[in-house]
Image 1 (cartoon, one colour):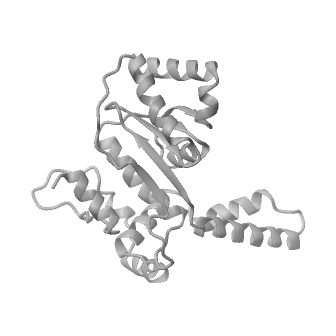
Image 2 (cartoon, rainbow, N blue to C red; image 1 turned 120 degrees about the vertical axis):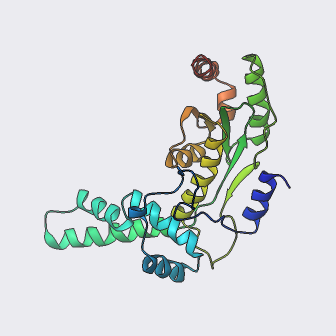
Image 3 (cartoon, helix red, strand yellow; image 1 turned 60 degrees about the vertical axis):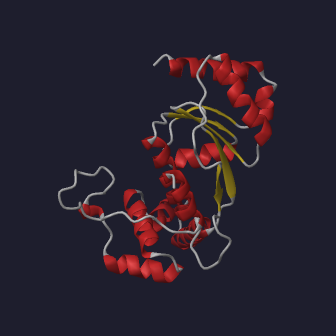
Length: 244
């Protein structure tokens, strides 16, 4: 079985791949393992896993992600402080409302689909579910042929859809969605992808959250198709990247 098909089966079954937490004996140094000092403790992992009914591995990834960024409570408190009133009573009310809103937004399950087109070894084309997918699939090859770039049929999942499973027993909040998308983007990086072209505001927002290098973006592919200046901007962006 090919590696990509195996990964697709595991993803469809909801199985998270195992990675060692410590370097294996006589193995070369790994660039994937985070420093041991940054690892969450087992008690925190078990507590989060039981609270949200998710595998311990997913809980560990979420906690690691939270360590690399500010926590939900910290972000909510900062939001409240920026908008707090001069009186103590109003300040407490503003903080309480802001914290509640931030927690609600974090726990809310996002719904979106990202469609991939991987036609050259270093550039990934992405559009979201709000776009005309057929037009998107027709535009990308036409533009690349005009640039006289060789096209490949690179094996990749056709799309990334969230929530992955319609179930209330699994945590599928924004933090988990970002972690899953980060894993997908890291796969593309290991295969040599260096830049991304996006169509749609949702695609832009989510790929920005995983630090994907976007070299060109547009909110609407149908509008892009009717704007000569937008086509020219994409052309120049691709020419500049190909000259590197």
